[in-house]
Image (cartoon, rainbow, N blue to C red; front, top):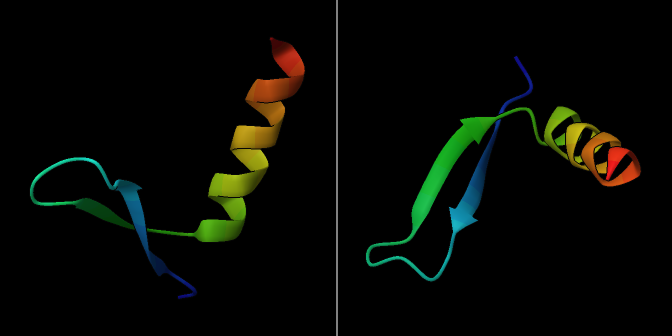
Length: 36
């Protein structure tokens, strides 16, 4: 499967985590950064 538990909102109470593919998440973030 290859899923990871990723903390997406550490400032929230309680902190928010999502189960996702971390490699894909980082790739999509880098693509959004290139677009803007």
